[in-house]
Length: 356
Image (cartoon, rainbow, N blue to C red; front, side):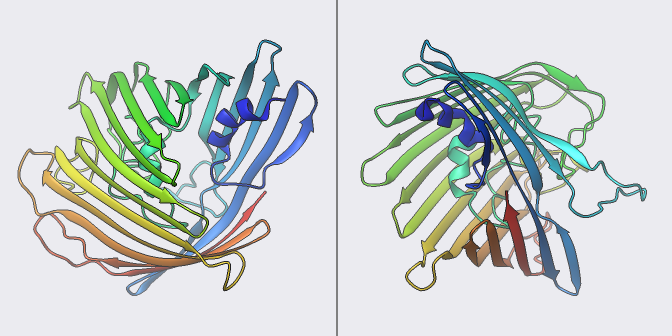
């Protein structure tokens, strides 16, 4: 199997795991299984919580054609390690779909994938989404990520290619509707009819470890305001250090002001900063993390000015040993609600995770 071609798509499923197991491989076929289990302990004010750590299991099948093309199928399901209950006291479903796509890839012509997959927008927005537990609150990735296509879009076609360190991703999201929908973070459009979605991400990787990127996207709805996003980002990577910064402007994507139930902020701006230092010289597998998330809501769902903003400063550390990861993060929460009140508690969280 051509490893260069297969990596174009396999990385989409195993972006968070380096421990996937290849259960079968010959000259043309490959089947890999991976995933993770974990738990998070949260301490916020006078409350404590133990919850799952986004467990998942994934399967990637690849086939190498003699023409130089490779076919790949990716399936990933998330599941609840611990019991999770709805507001009415019933248990939530044990499994839910995270990824499901098929595609073709060529070393020269790039990859074409169809189905539920990581978005073109995330190719750049994901540069700052590196915290083990928190973070990723200011660039609109997960606010409405499935329906509007910013995280793991439903019904998407994506073309990706890299030419001389220049990366391009083009995404089209097909028409769909649902009378009622619930996404994982309970921030959903109760009724929606998406006409189409479009995204373009561009980035360039310099030889010194520096990368610059931008992304633009728009999702068109029949019965709601259109969603629009514009993002610029920069990152730097070396053996000891990883740095990333992103700034975005959004319309009807984030949901901080909460002016009308689960309706989305008419206009908002977000900034994310992330830094990671790999301290293997102190202890192999140890790294220190720091970051900043700021989401400023300019106009709420009623098209009114608001004082709502999310401001998080984060410090943390992770330790990896074989297939296991242990992390701790502390979040200084200076956020404000729509009236300008800053009555949020700081948060301390620990996690333990096993990759397979």
